[in-house]
Length: 397
Image 1: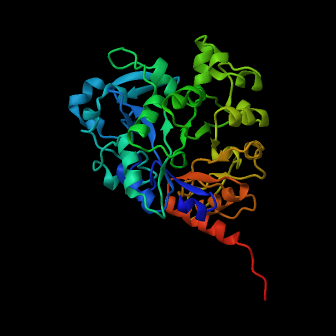
Image 2: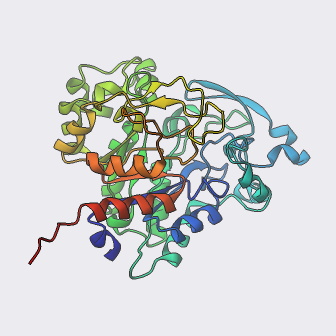
């Protein structure tokens, strides 16, 4: 892992590949991220009808594929409830992998990234196995590539969700993920992080699934906004009378009880983070605004001085102690998501217009060891700047 030694443990994670430049979650997006210098590529994973993990941010695929243009799949259009949200469209669990192969990806945010729409219709949906094979094929002695998969909707796929015909999905994304890594011979724990916004599936991975297979990959607990939401599995398991002590062990007491309203802020305390480190997590993935707080910014001009009020937020000052608690507990911290477009970086307190490079340098300076970024080339530049300005000064002879 030569590149990590050279970079003093600081990594750049290609968020959904190089999604600032190519439609997300395509092999072309991942390949570009690697060639721009990303150390890890991040596939979000959902399941097909025949139990194959594929790379999509959501299991509802009308926003990221051309499925609506396929009349042969018109009968698959339906409405489902996923993690408490009612969604209408087409869902991966109602398609076999062979059927999904007939679709083509498109840009998910065409208004923000119109240049990416020129690639619409060109690329297939990749399987997780193909993403792993790409990481293996593109690795070199001086640039070894890792994968950073996220299990999407694990409670939905394992316990709650149904296919179009009403039959339960009843598949464990975590087990299939680990089985895939083993089948592909990709078992070096230095080249894998497994992440999730839910808690129970990560604990299951640590205490049951990985030991049963003889592997031990580092696990990362993702945090949505700590002030407004909580892990979906807390809500589902509490509402359905699950044995919370069996699922979460001592975490129940550490956070003062788990119920349908328990929010991520209950996990952002020193004791909770220490328990997570001791029992299942190697790291956390916080939303960047929870460690760099943001306030709404009224602006008459954007940072490009083009008369558009594109700059949306400002960093009002010191961050939340969440970060220091995590670092003290010995957890690695990889916040999400850095984006170069003007309305994403936050203006610092002194009022100078921001850039994503400056934001990334600031995060490294706060002690994070990496970040998810849509433009990996800019993340690599930020790391070079940060390491360059932290070289020991040489005195005069």
